[in-house]
Image (tube, rainbow, N blue to C red; front, side, top):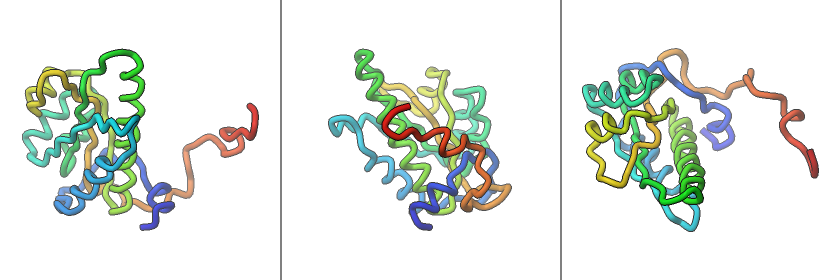
Length: 171
């Protein structure tokens, strides 16, 4: 898929087939996250790839809306350092967004769906993932092949019109 098509095909997927995602595809998705830009080249992320079904079920318990993680072929847990101050917190959220979006577009390019979830229960996250002190689970991406329909360019967008969103020079 071309980049422009991958951007237009990417959507949140919450229902997945039982088909496993090949290791090479998972590595490419993770590499996209690793290559994402960050403030001062900080690269504040670590990614934990989860493919074990029992572990996916336990990981899905970190957020009330993360049930899709339990049904995915894999999940990418995005772990970050605890920010030291408000400035670092703001930078961290922006950088994690960059890495997350890079992975979702890379996945779409491969025909693989993703769904994102927040993480509230940090005790559960740490028990499942075993990350060290001073870190927290920021987000989880479920990864797998969509069960409803393959990824394709979306022609009917549920988005505000272009002319309503884009302003030239001034508001």
